[in-house]
Length: 179
Image (cartoon, rainbow, N blue to C red; front, side, top):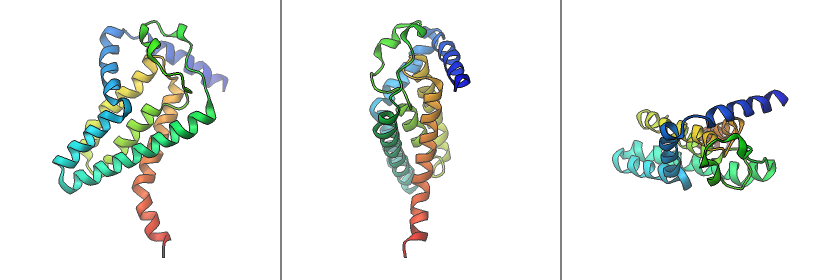
């Protein structure tokens, strides 16, 4: 655990030190769009409208996985972990003032972004590739603005991947389990 804490500290300080004028603005713009899942809901609407049956399947899978990831990360894990956010003195810019007061672990934003992206990719790989870019930007932004440690983001990504996997596999598993 000491090694993880040291890596979290080093990486948090390194990412937070990136020039906010060059890196922070684009990252913040994507994160603000992703706030309350607006970006992912908008992507789902576009896929459903433009993608026919494939788009509808992708949108439904993405929104289902996103909901599962948010429930798991925000309603369960954050309540159990109660980890404080990175210290404000590690963040050399004013983005740190806009972070939430809830538990740092795990990153719910990252969980939602990864869940949506991973769930849509099997149904529509091109849409998944397009969503991977803002999903990665959301993950980096959460560390850059001091809201999360890198391990919080990694845990959020793991929750997102698990949520996407469950979303994609549950219908298959139920078909084989229900007589």
